Amino acid sequence: MEKKSVEYQIIEIPTGTKFIEAWNIPQWIAECLVSIPDTPPLMVHLKKTTAEKEADLSDEDIWWLQGIWANLDIPKGWNMTQGQFALCRKAFEEAPDRPEWELGPQFRDYRNEAKAERIKIALLHRKRINAAIQGGSLRALTQDRDIAHKLESGALIHVDEARAHLRPIGFELREKQIIEQVATISTEKPLQRHRSQEDGILRVISRLGYEPKKLPRAKAGKAGVKAEVRKEFNFPSEVFVSHGVFEKAWERLRQQKEIQDSE
Image 1 (tube, rainbow, N blue to C red):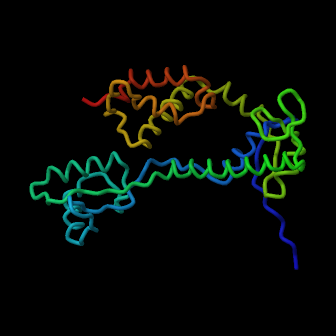
Image 2: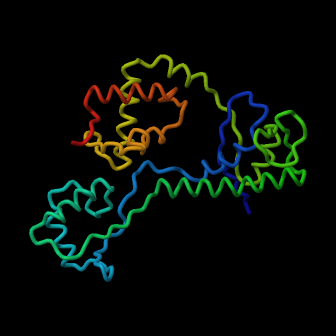
């Protein structure tokens, strides 16, 4: 019988890397195994509710809702965002023949579910790496270049040791060249770079279920939409090299009136 070759999950590291922070390896594994979908929470079920009970919609209920929502820009399968559902609820509330029951939507946050799964996987592999260090099968150094006896902050593992640990569980460390990427970023035209930053912000606003030109005002003592959007980006990154660049892009969108507060 012909033996099948193993297909490894690739983890890229900068060219010339000699040591890797042990704490990063579990996170890299989790990122390989679980991708984060670029979607906002979506409605997966809709029921009707009263003070006494919750029930499935009847065919007649569905037909009636389809009628009052016919002119709204929502998906046919009703797997809508929270922003889209807000429009549907408004139409429901204002309908002249509104029924006595209320709408009971159930949303699924695929993005946060994926993030939670990544955390779960990372914790599992942190325990495995810690056990390997304690058992002596994986050698690690402390920040002071002494022998580490457990997984701790700043602990370092030689790249060859990391490879030996990762290959049996289906992962391969691969060096990558970053010169070409840096050259591309440095020669990109400023206007193109600005538009890329602005489009990125607008996409995140929509993904979070907001309308860019009808942003809710921040309540006293609470973070607003801007803070929510900022959390979705990593700093530094190819798009935003600093928080200051993000702030400038946000202000450009304000000045261009592409993002506005609701009345």
